[in-house]
Amino acid sequence: MSKHQRGFTLIELIVVIVILGILAATALPRFVNLQGDARAASMLGVAGSLRAAADLVHGKWLAVGSTGAGNLNIGGTTVVAVSATGYPTAAAAGIEAALNVSSSGYNFTHAAPNTTVRPGANTTTACLVTYSETSGAVVDTAATVALCQ
Image (cartoon, rainbow, N blue to C red; front, side, top):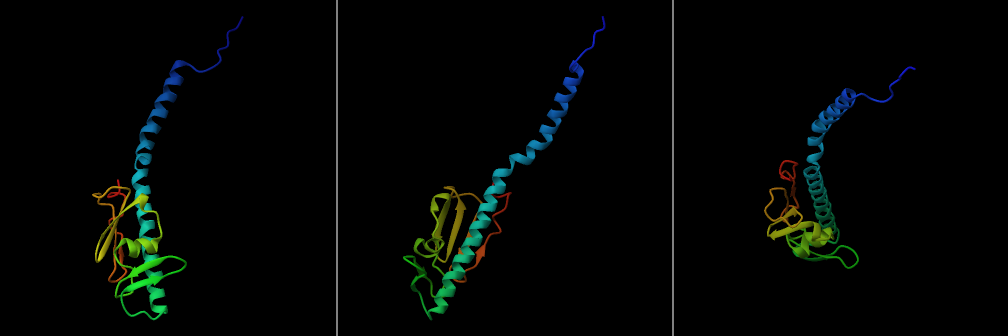
């Protein structure tokens, strides 16, 4: 009677487990940093939205022949406070109203002439985007993976 073994030996199983362990150890660091990547990408999206909103309001301000600060209806019931340069003011009634976005996902800090936007409820993180009401400029150099951890 001949015995034929079927299945894996103990050594083969241990080798497979060791190889899987090595693969997991090398792949894990690539996935751990995804939260910082996502937060940085979200902040870059906010920066793009700030630029678009500022340009939209400034274009409307120019099109209607405005020459100073005031309120500007940019469509429907959306009224935006505008600075003397024609860009939304650094206030909730200015750039935040022009964005028409729920501020629950971001922290807006308004201190004329700038508005600073940070992710979530965090007010101290170095991950931020800054908007200027004087020129409509948006600075997003602090929206990096390293700063948005």
